[in-house]
Structures are given as C-alpha cells and as structure tokens.
Image 1 (cartoon, rainbow, N blue to C red):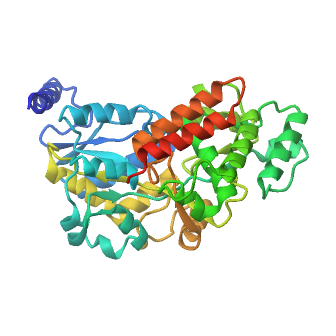
Image 2: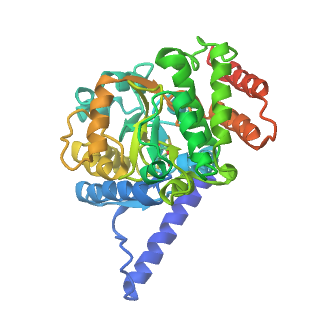
Image 3: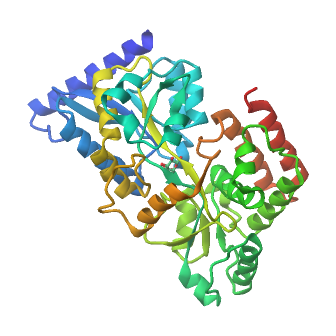
Length: 416
Ligand code: GAL
C-alpha cells in the first residue's frame, strides 16, 4: 500500500516537475504532462537492443494517443541487473506497468506466484491465436490461460566469426564438428591468437555449454535435461563437459568480467575469431550454426506482461497491443536482430540473416534455452550460473564437481 502511494507520489512529483519546466520555457524534454505514463521495464539500454525498443516506442506513440512511454530500462545483458531490481519491486508490490520476461519456465514462475494478469480475452479480441505458431501458443498457455505477449523469437546457438582473423591463420572452411572447431582453435593459437574464442560472464558461458550439450545429446535428449528424463550424470553429459572445458581453455582469461558486448568487441577488434552468442549480436558479422547443432533452432522469446497491481492497465494494454501487432513486430525485429513471433509479418526490410532464420524457425527442430528462461526457471538458471562461475575461476577444472553441481541443480528445480 505504502509503495503504491510512493509510486503515485513519484508520478505526481514528476508531472509537477514537467509542468514547471513547461511554464519556465524549458519543456522540450519530450514529456506530455497531460498524457498517462506506461512504465516499461526492460534491459534494452544500448546498441541494437535500444534501437529495437525505440522503434517499438515510436509505434506505441502513434498507436496510443494520450499515453506516453516511461523508460525503466536497466542495462546488463540477459537482464543480469534488471531481473534483481524487478524482483525487489515486485516483492514491494510496486511493479512497473509492464516488464520484459522470457516465454517459458521464467514466465511460469511469475504466473505461479499470481503476479500476472490473465490476457486470454485480449488474445481473442486482438486475433492473436490465428497469427502465432501453435507451439509457441502452447508454451505460453498455463492452465488454459495466457499471460504474456511475445515480441520476437531469438536464436541462441549461433557462432559469430571474424573471417579476417581466420584467413590470416589459413582457415577457410566452416567447422562442422566440435573436434573440427577445437582443431581450428589450436591452429589459431599456433598463429598467435592467444584466446581465439571470445567468452563473457556466467550466462554467456551457459550459452556455450548448452550448445556443446546439444551437439553431444541431440535435440530431444538435450530438451529432456530440463524435464528430468535425461540424466545429468550420464556419460554423454560428462563428455560434453570435457569439450566445454577444452573450449573454455581457448577463451579470454578475463571472461567473468565481460558482458556480451565486451566479449563481442574481442571478435570485432580481431583479438578473437569465434564468439557464441544469440542473434542480438552485431549485424554484418559472418556466422554459422554451432558445430553439431545443424537443424536445431535453440529459441527464446522476449514477451511483455500486465502485472497484478499495474498502475495504468489501459495504457499497458495499448502497449501490449502494439507489441503484438504485425507492424510493431516488424519495426522492432528489423532492428533487434530477432524475427517476429507472428507468422504473418512480411519479410520487407529484414537482413539476409533474419530471412534465413525465419526459414529455419519453420523447418528446424526447436529446443529451449536455460540461459534465457525458455527451458529452466530463474532459480535454476542462477544455480547453474554459480556452478559455471566456480568452474571458470578454478585453476584445476574439475569436471566431476561441475557435473555434480549441475545434476544437483536439476534435482532441486525440476518440477515434480
Ligand atoms: C536475452 C534477451 C535478448 C537480448 C539478450 C542480451 O535474454 O532475450 O532480447 O536482450 O538477452 O541482452
């Protein structure tokens, strides 16, 4: 109650400040004191992420007269800082009007805690059931109800490449297997590139590990790691962890202190040749599907919700409708690097990479991502990231201990 009051007071003060600035002739800060605010919480604060958000905001401003966007972005890839801040606000009953959350297990946690409002009637009113892929709709439906609106589909299992660095080391082909990738890394090191694989902090290490697990287990068995049907203590997982350790050995020693844009910079500056990252990575870089992942599309989807206790539900519904619209998804995704979640958005304006991703999304086998919440809950992801952090800094890479920590996390968080 107190927080709702504080939020109200904050808004009144903000409106008063805007009015004062307008009266004093300094009102060119883009705020309309007469409009209601929709506070949108994301981690899209820089680069292509911000450009995508900005495009969505322009659409929202045009589509939703009388409403204005209030940016509550908290910087940090994959929401490393944002998610904690959001949790604190939600626990204080002071939610933003809407927030970014991954479709899948990450979203389920909020639904189970009763933090989200049911959008099923809006889906029907906006005709969304006809334009979203049935598999995605199924993943968004909990006990017959839908609580979030997907903005996009990203692909995680992509390797981005600096072809100049490869050419200088005499490498021209694409590695199709993990062994071939390890051979290329050895060649690069021999040619003087000390850390040819760019890697960043915890969650980016998890992305690398997941891609290696897909190579060893295949799509189906990998997906079952998150349902309890595949054993984390199996020989295949152990072998995958061995390859993961070998790959990490070719990466930059300061990985734990780099967010993904700083890891990507190593690639762009020619200090590394390969970087495993989702397709929010800089456009224009060459890329290939992670070796052994061919025909497998590791997906994640950013979605937006209407939290229980949101201050401006009407304005938020208009934001959600913009996010859901064909034009909103086109303008957002063209800049964000992802592809529309809707199936009826024309390809105009999308890059060659994105057009290929649209085709692959239709034909490949979809598998979810733990690093980006489609496969595992936030608590589970935190436990895995902690285990990977310990492994990353250890001088002696104890694979058995890592496997035990991953198996313990699965045992703790797989829902009975
Ligand atoms: C993901 C998110 C993407 C992108 C990425 C890097 O979790 O789904 O949209 O923001 O993090 O920050």
